Structure formats: C-alpha cells, structure tokens
Image 1 (tube, rainbow, N blue to C red):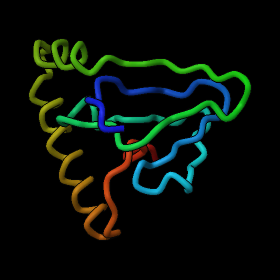
Image 2: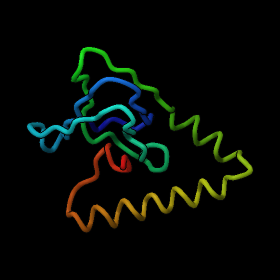
Image 3: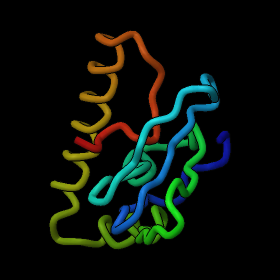
Image 4: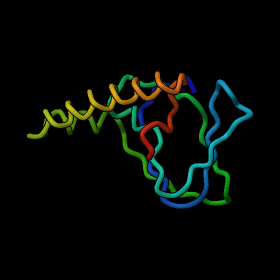
Length: 110
C-alpha cells in the first residue's frame, strides 16, 4: 500500500485476500473473475491495501497501466477511453461519498 498503482490485476483462479491498510484486521475475499486496481488504468493511483494468496495456488493476469495508457491514447477510440476515465472517476467519487468510505483497490469490481 502507498506504492504507485502501476498495474491492474485480473484473478483467473484461486482465492486471494485483500487487506486495507487502514483496517488490516478486516479482509475481503477476492475470487476468480475479480478485477483489482482498475483505478490504476484511469487515475494517478496509489495502492490502498495488500493482496495476498489465500489458497495454495492462484493465477493472475496483470495489465501495465503505463503501456495501457500509451496504447489507448494512440487509439482511434481515444475519446471513448477518455470519456470512460472521466465517468469512472465521477462514479467512484459519488459512490464513496454516499458510503462515506475511502477508496479501495477493489473499487470497480462489480
């Protein structure tokens, strides 16, 4: 936590556990199909917690945020990516304000 958010993760198999730095005694289960740190693709992001393997084996895919941004800004659909980034930020702010919570690396995984 506190490190620059440079990657988004996709959980393929296994079970992971996510602990917020602010409440290390509380953990969330992260299961196959989950996305972690999508905000790193769209925002200047710092990881908010720690992801640990809860099962013996887990497989993750990672997407490098810097490479993703380079590709999307050169895309003929750059305007759509930019729109999505703005909407992502607005939705995150509105949802977190309504819940009176700090952002998590698990935001956007619904």
